[in-house]
Image (cartoon, rainbow, N blue to C red; front, side):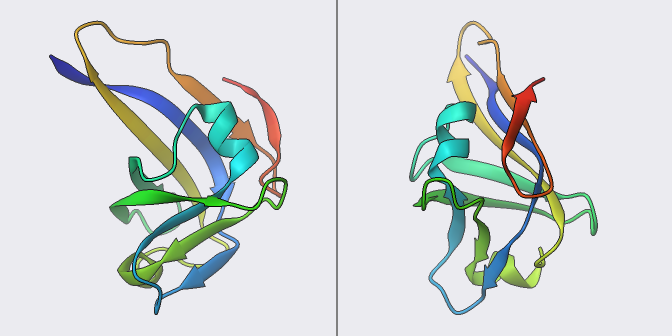
Length: 113
């Protein structure tokens, strides 16, 4: 068994940061569905601005809000306005075709990559 990329949200803009929250990343429910990511799933978040990478888990955000919120300790490493790549992985025998979602500056779905 190997771990493969399953879903990715590419070039999302962080809209909020809540360092006092328990932890996680909040993501607009529309984007979760497009990328086939699920609430409580572990994800790797990489900032294109700072190069920081954080593993955390997903909390479902308000549908259609464009919300990408870094919560807890991750909010100290990835800031509001940062452009991020959010990656979910799957452990399987065969690599799945990944759902790679490109978004615009308002975190709205543009197209699959």
